[in-house]
Amino acid sequence: MLIQNRWKTSLKNVKTKPGADVDTDHMLLWGKIKWKLRRMNNSERQQVKWNIQDLKCENTQQRYEVSACE
Image (cartoon, rainbow, N blue to C red; front, side, top):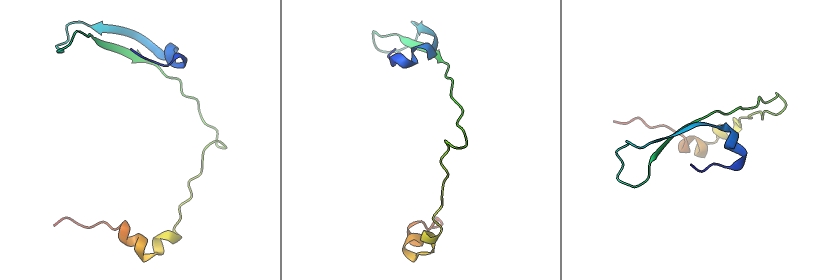
């Protein structure tokens, strides 16, 4: 199993499954990954700004118009 060096502590409980029905000389690997994700502060989150003025343009409306299937 290939993994970057910085993630090697996240890889837990790796086993091989020799009885797997695979048409090759390799064995199937089974492993668990445990990640710790850091929480983002409100200042780090990017605020999404919607451009409503663009939707008033007819060309834009036609591009995103949903047509019903008949």
